[in-house]
Image (cartoon, rainbow over all chains, first blue to last red; front, top):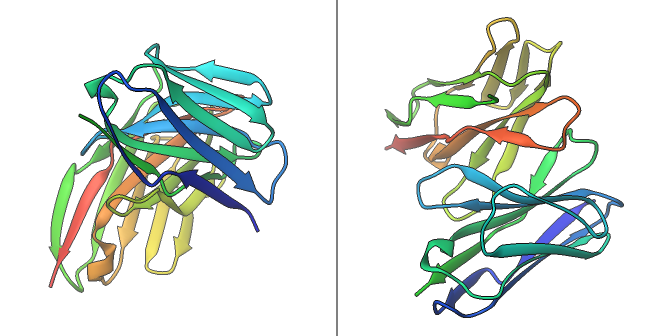
Length: 111
Length: 112
């Protein structure tokens, strides 16, 4: 069966510090991968999606970036965090755009 | 513009009661529509998914309907339980894309 992992589960970082969130998927090949952010009490905002290794599409211009070094690994990064980067970050995967499965999420607080 | 709107924004009901959540969309061309349940601090979990040709789909006490002509969907929860307290999110995907359009969700609270 397929499984999606995200870590860390929670993170508190000072403004201006770097960020690296990791997502890995097990049990499937060549998935579409997604990064979403959810502000408190708000809907999900698509940040990045990837249809293959090294292929990244950005939806929202900001100080975040994403990389896909391996087929089932998706990384969200920032060189310098802003207060507005605080939120709940969700990784998700899908195959053929039918069902989409979400990871457990990372709660990021920028102080 | 592809959009998904949900109503009500929030809802409070007593345990054991039924409720219906609404979703209107303007996504075109339509591929499929899903309903997710998201507990606080957790990732969304799929409840149902429907394609153009499906009108109704059930998952236990959850029943989703789809009217592709009016571009409306509803999620009916029967005999609510305290554990149903969560946000319910309607998501529509457009054919030929890898993207999903999310509604802002309905926050349901079930009281004892």
